Length: 456
Image 1: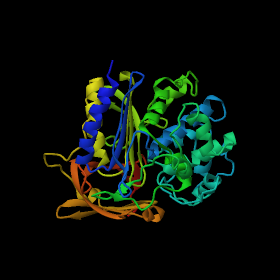
Image 2: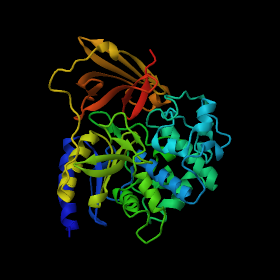
Image 3: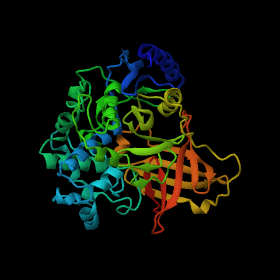
Image 4: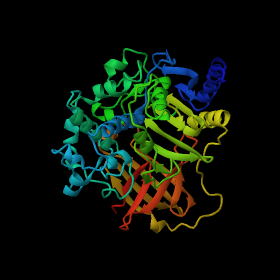
């Protein structure tokens, strides 16, 4: 049996060292192994300006890990016969109006859960603090140009989860924040999990830090309409109580069945291949992204808000789940080092290596890639410069108001034909850029989990 006190103390020392190395102001970490929380620690500062220490009960923003919580409630409603995976969303939301009649009548729950709807995902419009914020947000989707045809590829879609949140409200008659309390927080016994700022402020709360070196973010959180996509705040221990639900086939620690075994399995079953299999995983299930490390199944999700990053990975065969919550700095490099050590020690698993530039020359015809690729909130221009390719990346639209730096330039380093990597200044890891075409021949870039069509 693992000595919990000894392992927590060891990880306090190690996490302190690694957080300092990667300029991460504060971090919380918990490890669930064979049914027990075997380590829990927090290091650094939750708020650098106020000098507030990060503790194990500090609430961090878990960001898009929230999507799997929203998915879990949706699948519980599928179990109850209130929703169907492959029925049109319009059958329960008849007022829905999307960019085309085909999309309006064709989009299903499965499309939303697998990020294959084609709805452009990065519409960050503030529709107010009222309980009707999701309803107001969904009413705006008719003016949003799709970034790919329905089901044609996978493109990470925040907007689809706000739409899903509205579907859940209509089906249950319960507003989304309260629905999460009813269906997850209370049954799981969570006391340090919340969405609304006034609830979070009852606890010690982390604030994000942006830039290099990290400085306190100008705002604490995103607009309320982003709730189902990414506004849950929690602690590593409580995120792992949610993970335990999925490890234990839909049953809570006190024996309450929240989700059928079939729905738990469906969420972990590959539904669509990810065009860029190098950054998160090689496939998406229902809610979860799916990967393989050293021959072992892995599922999980990441989260990123304004200056906060969250990581959850579950290795079911090893009965292992790990949650790391952070508030700035080079969090991806910290995640890699922390998780690589834990999975090796507790499961004997070697974490999948990251992608890097090719060491040998790669034949690249710049004409194959040069041009403008554009979707809502993003304009990417690929230009030829000094015999190589450069990516000019610009954030546009409402999202630009939240970003500290809206224009960036990266040199594209080839890995193989159609696959390149870029590196952000001040960060260690290489990030993939995949050039590919849809079945109809339309050229696309896949970068940051999103599909962006070539427009010129």
